[in-house]
Image 1 (spheres, rainbow, N blue to C red):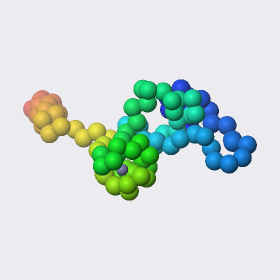
Image 2 (cartoon, rainbow, N blue to C red):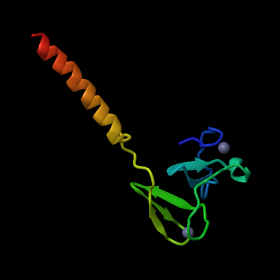
Image 3 (cartoon, rainbow, N blue to C red):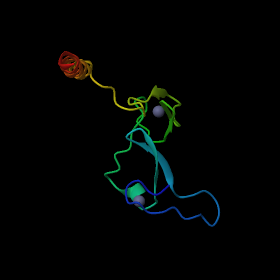
Length: 105
Ligand SMILES: [Zn+2]
Ligand SMILES: [Zn+2]
């Protein structure tokens, strides 16, 4: 996974822990390269309880690695729901077309 901010590719560390940092941005798990960790426009998601950016994004929830607070992800990964009004309009248009077709025959 490349750095979400600059797109740099992660290189394998020679030894020890990777200098790359994990974070959550727009409720998606991202990696931040060592250069970008010092940037001031990271806009990482923060924990609502302690303000930490050390978050883990899992399926449907975001967990804070500092205070272990878990909150549900606000947006689901599924397709956007069709508003009720729009569905009604489509149904009305369909019935108009179908009604015209049946009256012609
Ligand atoms: Zn970067
Ligand atoms: Zn926290």
